[in-house]
Length: 128
Image (cartoon, rainbow, N blue to C red; front, side):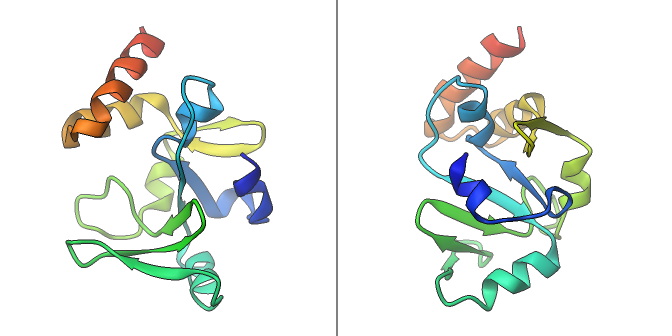
């Protein structure tokens, strides 16, 4: 997870969500890295012109640079920043905080996009 290391973030200010944990556990490659950060960290990246705003269909947005996206919330029913909630379900691999495989599975089963179906199978096998 060299991309994450290069951001020089304090471990209490972020968590990697999405397929990042699958790559860290060597279950499959990740095409990109999705990171939830604290509001203060988000503001710091938002001020950096290298990070471009990427707006989603629902009006929310992330900051993107290369294969990395930085956001304030993930798996949040009210779209509020939820880093502290996610930290309650973290696992740490090589010093990097990731969302737990069980929380990722629950989310993927809930959103059930076609691109998630293989990951659901991988996660179910991993978790037994």
